[in-house]
Length: 571
Image (cartoon, rainbow, N blue to C red; front, side, top):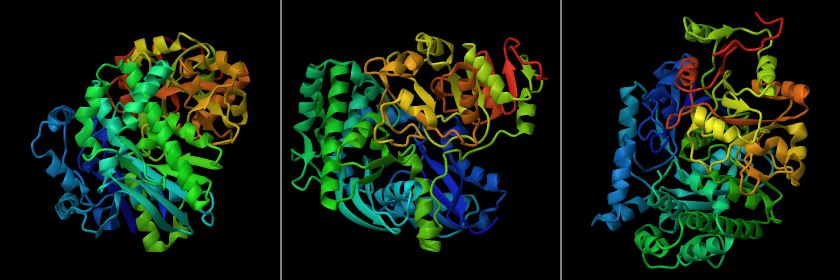
C-alpha cells in the first residue's frame, strides 16, 4: 500500500497512527508493545507496527504528521519522571525552564523526530502541527456528524506548545481560533500537581482523585474549591483562564500546597473536582454565548474527566456535546493524521471516527498458537458469544480478548473483563482476582443502546460509545447494575453499545438480554495491575495464568480453569 500518512506523538503515552486517503486504518500506543504503562518517548515499536499491520514499507509513507511543534521526545522511565517532579520546585532554573516551554516551536525537537524516523528508513517530509490545533482536529474531524454544520471546539490540557486551552469555531473544514490560554494559567497543571502531591502519578492517576471526590463532605469540599479559585478564574470575556497571582500556577504550587495542608485528602480531591467542573462549565457557557453555537466538541486531557463532561453536557446552553475518545496526548497522532489528510486531499476526504477498534486483531491462527499446549480446558463453541453470555448469566466472570484491539485508555469489550453487575460484591471479588485497584474506584457498565433509558438518566440522548461521559443511574435500575455504579453518588461511566454494532460485545449483550432480561454488563479492562491493557492472545492467557480468573475468551476459543457448562452443540 502506498501514499500513506503516518501520525506521531513522542511524549507521555506516545502513539502512532496510519491511514490513507483520509481514512484512519490503524493506531496503537507504544505502551501496548513495550509493556511499560504510559510509555514516554519516541514510539519506535508503534511505527513499526503501523507498517507491519498494512504490509507496507518505509518508502510507502508519503507524509509524516507530528501533533506538536515542541516537547519531549526521549524515553523517561516512570521512576525518573517521579524523581524529577519531586525535585522540580527546588530547581533554581525552574522559571527559565517555564519560559522556554512558552515557546511554541522547538527546531531541536523537530530535528530529533526526523532523526528517529530516518533510523527507521522513513524519509518522507514531516509536518509539525500546533498541539492544540491538533487536539481540536481530533474532535472536529473525528466526531463531526455533518461537515456543513458549525461546531464549537474546546481544547484543554496541562500544556502543549505554550498553551493549555483554546476556543475555536469549525465549519466546512475551516477553523477560526477565538481564544487561547497560555500554560501559566493551566487548570490541567493544578490537577497534575495535586495528583503528585498526594502520592499518585500524574498522567496516570488523575482519575483516582475524581473517583474519590463524591465521598467527601460537600461543605468541606467547597472550602477547598475556594482555595483553588483564589488562584485561577476566567477573564472578562469568559474565554480564557487567568491567574490571580503574579507567578504562574506552576510556580505558585508550593503556596497552594501549604494552604491545602490542613484539609483532609478526600476534601482536597472533591474541592479540586468541584473547582474544575465549575470553571469548565463557566468557560463553556461563555464560549457558547460568544459564538451562538450550542454544539460542542472537546479534546485534550482535561476532558478525560467524565464528571466534568457530565456537568458540561447538562448545561442548558448545550444542545449536543461529545469528547473525543481517550483525548489525552495519545490521540495527537490521529489529529495530526486528520490535518495532513485535509491539507493533501481536502476536508471532505477525511472520514470521521467509525469506532475505536483500531488495533491488532486476534486471528484464529494466533489464538490457536497461543492456546497450544496450555494446561486449561479449551473449547471452540459453535456460538462463542452465546457461550460467554451463558457463563455471565450464571454469575461467572469472563475475560475477553477477541477482535481488533481498542485504542486508548478505555476497554470497549474486545480487551475486557465482563461480569453481571447485579452482584454488589463483585468489585471486591474482581479486585481480589485480578484488578487490585484502589478500593474506592468504581467499575463501569456496557449497556445496549435500545435499553439505555431503562438504566441511565440521559434526557438529551447524549451518545456515549467510548466511556467519555458520566450519567446518573435510573433509580429503579440501581439493583441491576450496582457493581458498575459509583457507590457514593450512583453515577456511572457507561459504554452505550449500538444494538446492531458488528462487535462481539453487542452480540454478547443481546444474548445476555435474551437469557436474563437485563441489557447491562460490567466492563473493565483486561490487564494486570500496573500493566497496560493486553494486546495479544498470549498476553490475555498470561492474565489468566497470573490471576484467579476462571474463564478467558481468546478469539473463537474459550479457555477455562474448570470445564465450563457448554451447550450440546459445542465441540
